[in-house]
Length: 417
Image (cartoon, rainbow, N blue to C red; front, side, top):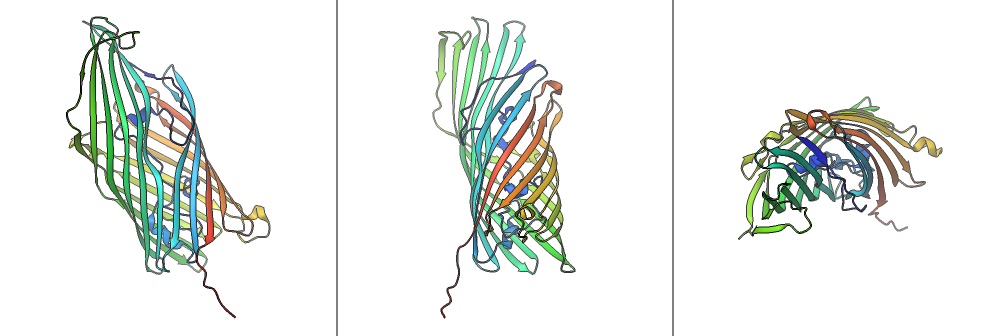
């Protein structure tokens, strides 16, 4: 049996994603869900704080916001990729929105953030070919589209000097559609098409802890942890089954029967818990070096109470850092921040007795505007997902993210002479 890539093109707009065969599983591919500043360092961020950037990888990091300032941050990306099997390849590109966040300082000990980001995305078109001895050759064709969105409210609180906690409370919503077609070449065989529309909603929580330890008033050691508990999402689905005589792709296929649902089907998804930890070494306004580890027990994910055998526990390692030659220099080039990082992940997918892996290399440049803390960033990422072995698919991708960080005074006491 050989897996074949469906060749098709997407209009380039903010709502579409590339053909990603691996997004067929569970509720789609999980989005990166990290800021441009963090992505430029390879995705590290559990032990990172910044007064001029929103780090939603760890909500405890919000505590670093300037007391009198408002931060508005957003990003969009351009991604190109190539999908390969043993003999076939497909190329494509797309543009999509990554996130939009607003952060303010409520008090010296309480900072808050609201934001939007994609939670999952699903876009795939793949097919399997096989033969039944008594009937003949047939194609199983899988397509899917849609995804979930996340609107979150984050809060951070200072417990003690250098010690902070935070929590992101998110509302997840959206829908996706899946279709599966069993299409026989034999004109006397019964072919069938199964269509399903799923509407999802639920709440998602991520708690964070950070402890920043000053060393001789010059260096800073950072410790960070994040935890997401197992939570449930709710699904309402409508399914439709249509049967035909012979090839569905024929000019005028013979319709046999259509089975309409009587009611919406309701079920829950059991989402996995996740634990992450990070360690950093930094010199404020000069450089930052960090290592992160994340474990997510996707083996406990359940679809309507049933385990998903294609999912297993995921492990991710990331290492990266940034450097600013001289942040308060009169020389503009000395105030540009450069970042680099890399990550490696054993993903949640276990297919053909192979755990799908992924690695990425990241580079970032942040350009400050003159006489302002507002910045423009460009982040580059090259990566690879999967393998061509065992009839699987390999994706090589290149992403350019454009990041805008607006940092403006939102409150200032007026003094009268």
